[in-house]
Length: 505
Image 1 (tube, rainbow, N blue to C red):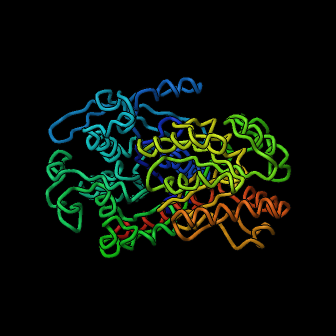
Image 2 (cartoon, rainbow, N blue to C red):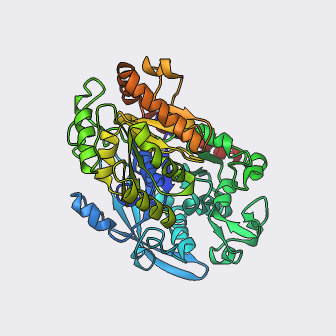
Image 3 (cartoon, one colour):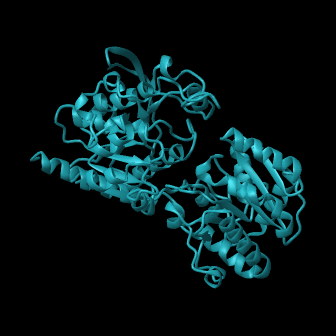
């Protein structure tokens, strides 16, 4: 008997997500979907795991450049509010990995940007663009998974209609799971979108999808899923309180029956400093000589002079208020006195971009700014820096700190959400004994960031042997998807059994 469904057949899992790395990505969601489904296949070789996602402009070309090919398309007509969309479902099948089903509707996806043009706002028809994959998953799940789906798993507001359509349709033994990757993005729409998305008006009340007079897709996913999850245990607790609940804390406490937190992981084969071709030198926890080479090359690449005691801090982030990068900007005039250099890689809020550009012009000896995301440059930053700054005001999980630790760069982070779950700070002595992975600060203000950075600078300068033990300990920690994927599989089996029991099956 398969260890999957408990019913003598493999567990069948169907994800719905708006992005999947490396083919489409704007942030952490893409990273998760590029790693979690494959890890679930590895964790249960009997399982059938598939992902439904849009075929955006350029994705097919990227797949071809990787030496892969999409399979023969399957045709399906998707009907939403009287409109019909002729979709081609094009599979990407790779041995030992989840099957990706790309929904090809050129009228919806052959345009600039996943969600909208850069600095140009969202595409106005995004609700329909992301309703289509959800409808496809519910309509054709058995065909896409090779049999009756045990668990339908929607991700963030773009995938939230999958559990909604499932539960509002004919009675089904398929269990549904919905994951919130960031509660701040609630998928808020004008009330008339209830009709446009083909929903009954019974969903539009405070216990279902209504949110202060608007329709919230994310709230719908939370409401109609059998199990709701977030991407770290601490964030799952935080969103039950007003400070982090985004106006949904009361709803989460009283109307969501089951809420769990499972931390994210990373692809440790793709993110490995011992083999990474983007680095100027390779290194591992047992031989850090290559990291010194990467450090010198990073400083030279960004035109920064460093000495042996100079600490290189990096920020690799979306430039937004959530990420606290404005707090880092406040510290730039102090870098000279701290004997520190700062490298910022990212894009986002135009006002913050302009502020960082001004700082780079006026404090060029101590700060370098690269506006935009360059994947190879980010890897060189993780490989060559001493410290990664993550002063996020809230952080559902974050993956930057996981990459940094994997590459021997110590995170200095606000003790919130997934940062608190992954950055272990038992105090200076324990850190220098190799019994921790990074530095946390409690106050998310300039003073807190200064305290955390200064502490890292002093440890590295005054206790170099202890710092080396800390670096090695952070690198050796298992940040893979193996443990999180196993937790999800256990949750799936439990949800599937509960759904079938409810239906008397």
